[in-house]
Image (tube, rainbow, N blue to C red; front, side):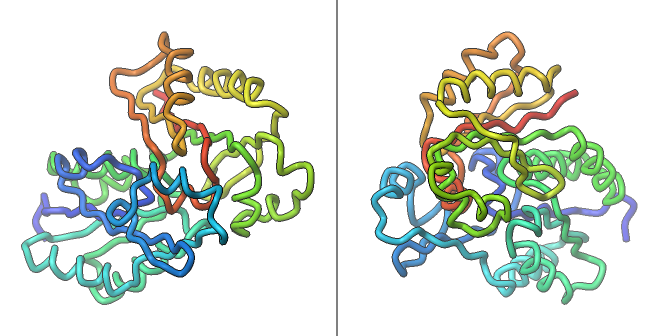
Length: 280
């Protein structure tokens, strides 16, 4: 293999990376699916996030999600290698939260050592920032080993916290053991969660949104100094703007505001607010 191999970066739509950055960094994204009342919709393509979140509370059945089959990943890997790429880094959401990593890993088996699948141990821009860092390093000619070391170091500096508007969606998703045990009146609280080491952990709850917002500001300020920041929301852009206003004095140069993908939103519900922060 050449000393500076040509490395392709692959991820999936749970990374929440804006389209313009996918193009700028030549990142290859495989879309997942959300199934609404028996109809399958391709994330980022067949249904807008705004329409999805507006419709979600009135859906007769809770939507479910599905990863793209391993064959889609295999076809993409084959194409990239045939186009001259020496190596592929395929970076995905936590294996504890989704079957995406398994699908990518099954496809990678056909390519020996030329495709490496990486568990980001995160989701949304916790994954997205890792993918962008890998793509930037690859563009600069870094080796596979150097990129892997960079991702490991970056992963330790990422904090992803969210305040959900209700426990109902994450409870019904069945993906989080502690959420399955919380019933009745607890569905009315504003639960806080953190994605840490690939798991969704409970950070407690508040009884009102206003108290939760104050806590969100406090949690974000604890991460300073900030290197990168993405404010995450599920069709709650005004809440995202308010959060940015409250922390304007600590913001890094570039800040993302992300209306979270439908595949994640199916499990957390509308009106959620959170952040992915990378501390220096």
